[in-house]
Length: 105
Image (tube, rainbow, N blue to C red; front, side, top):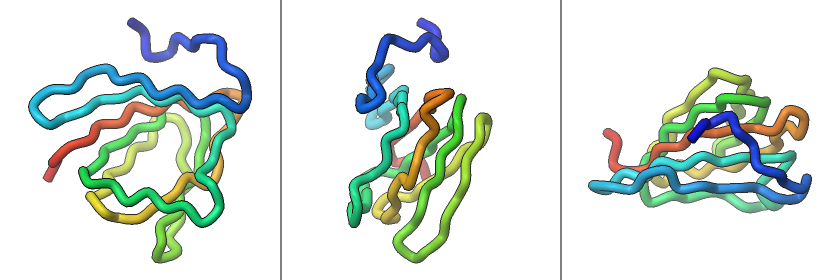
């Protein structure tokens, strides 16, 4: 498998692929094609998340008002229950995310 191989996707489709799940750790590849979190939606995840943006650009916002612009190569650690949302993702090129979920601290 190649993380940069993109299957055909429509512009309203986001793909989340489970790459590995073992011992309480889940690794996913996510391909975003311009998607954002719905208005007034906040992720409140049970697990920590380490996420890297491999391609594209995106912006995340936290409930406390912080924002983070991401470009290819940037990564973040998001502790469990730290409410956040995806404000926007680039469509051309699509965003390729690598996300690791679990008890990481």
